[in-house]
Image 1 (cartoon, rainbow, N blue to C red):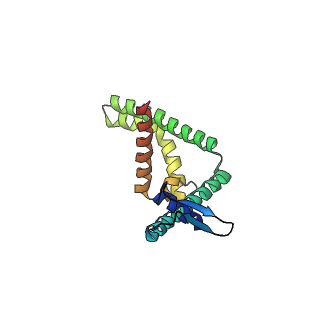
Image 2 (cartoon, rainbow, N blue to C red):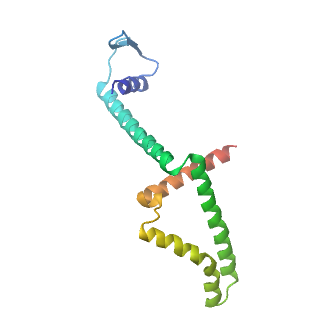
Image 3 (tube, rainbow, N blue to C red):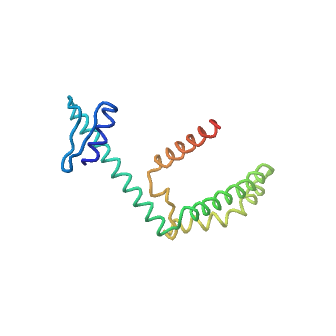
Length: 157
């Protein structure tokens, strides 16, 4: 917690204090009125943020060890997105041309086997999707936040 108090002091009083260390204790120069309640509140917030970061880092290390490195996971994600893009494109075009219920059913047939396979494995518990273990609203918020951030970078180019 001591490191968070020091960081909180630097955040709360930028360029106005120096924190010294005499080998055993930290001290402030120049001595001044410090709002210790605000400093302690900031230090507690910093400690909570560090705990959350440590937990997230640990979880990511566990994922790395059990599911593969980032490049492998990215490759699998790319495969999934490409599969969905191609198959949904085929379905969209076929549905767009369909004029009867039989043609609509026929349009859905090629992807039906894939959908049946994955859904039956999810229902049986043989396959689990990470987003299903998270709060649905949090998943959507993450998607929206990252998409907006990337778009902001692209728009700044």
